[in-house]
Image (tube, rainbow, N blue to C red; front, side, top):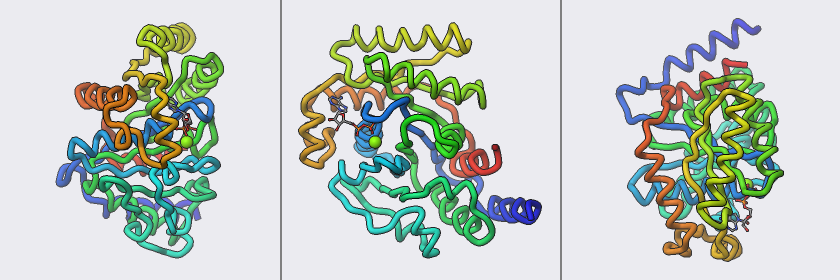
Length: 287
Ligand SMILES: Nc1ncnc2c1ncn2[C@@H]1O[C@H](COP(=O)(O)OP(=O)(O)O)[C@@H](O)[C@H]1O
Ligand SMILES: [Mg+2]
């Protein structure tokens, strides 16, 4: 049985276009230690800032319990990744086009099932997900907080992991737990810190500094801070208006910070693992 499943996976993998013939599709996973630190807002506004630079971006809502990218954008998806598998739908059928052409896919309940697919469903998932190779520049995964088995699998398969923290100590200690769990699996994982809701650059630096110190001391891992986003009242107002702050309040401090974050990200050399193909391989073959 296991052999048969492996052969099937290999067949499907061969059908995914090699990355050299198409544009590189990078996968970024956004995570945090605890919920409510601003992952979904960071994911969505970061994605929209990339879109403003003419990048094609697809955002994936994998935060099952608290799925809310759709709510933040004011859209209501009819289908999701799980219904795609259950009803044998094409990926096209489950992609929502959100604001400014941002593409969006809801994960749906039971996203962990993806790790246990077999036979036809696996074949279907690979074909559909693999078809994204070269179609978009970035796939952004808004993952759940903390550590579930499937969450870790998504994270360790991504090209880049953004770890969102707040200045409050519980967010930092929980995020450290996530980092440690990832580090145990892969010491080379490119994790980048984003400090959200800092009241000043000093506070952001201090927060990141404390985290970096702990990581260097206990894990011998150095982590870069990608940037920080200020605590800004317009974020809450935009959430209530169900419109991303980058669009609702383009000149707000938070929006300016997100654009800066994206510019920094695009300037640094970042890792790349063969795009969608690399992502699928890592996610499904590496336990
Ligand atoms: N930069 C910010 N400034 C002020 N409030 C923020 C900021 N980022 C997030 N928030 C608040 O935190 C809430 C939770 O954010 P959300 O992105 O849903 O977190 P998560 O996805 O991590 O659970 C938002 O509804 C908003 O009120
Ligand atoms: Mg969220």
